[in-house]
Amino acid sequence: MVTLTEVDIIQLLRKNNLNQDTLQETVVEKLSQKKLRAATAESCTGGLISERITRVSGSSAVFDCGICSYANAIKEKVLGVNPETLAVLGAVSAETAIQMAEGVYKISGADIAVSTTGIAGPTGGTAEKPVGLVYMGVCTKDKAYAVRLMLGGAENRLNSRAQIRRLASDAALFTILSECHNM
Image 1 (cartoon, rainbow, N blue to C red):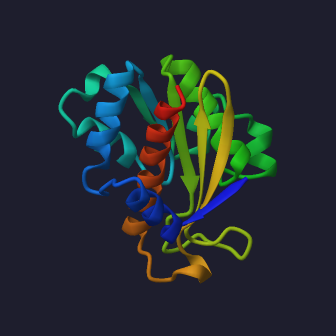
Image 2 (image 1 turned 90 degrees about the vertical axis):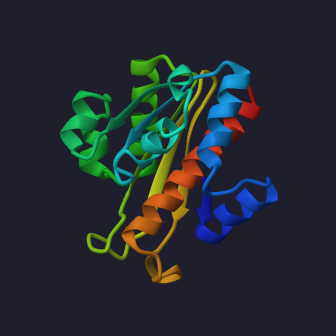
Image 3 (image 1 turned 120 degrees about the vertical axis):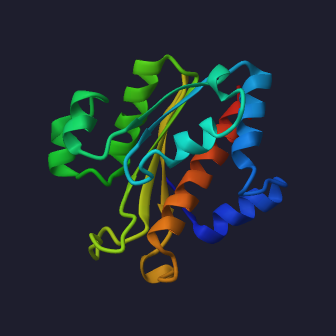
């Protein structure tokens, strides 16, 4: 599984000449050009990815839905996350992120689905799952996978809850854009 840090995300954006403040506009434009649709299932980002996409005029043509599944019961009932996955691995796991992405993919009929689940802090972290640990799930017609994001904790205690959520949403938007290029 790929692990990305704050530095990795910022470098990916710079390398691709992308601006954090206009990333969502680039995503909507690329989805529109490719005639693709996206959907999100969000836990730790609390709807931020959806908000950023729908902030852009014309997003209704490319964005199917955003489900904010903060509670495990919603992850199970709405997105179809396996209760055993949550009981054994927890909400903050690669498997949960993948199942969330698969669930919103099935519900929406979108071409690209992304999910986020993690610990935005400032409390709630443990040694095994520190503040800033986020798993992003991705689902398309051909694949489902997870990316591990390390956006805080011991590596970078300067990140606030808002920064962790913003960086996770940047990573998700960049991933949607990357998947567009693969279709």
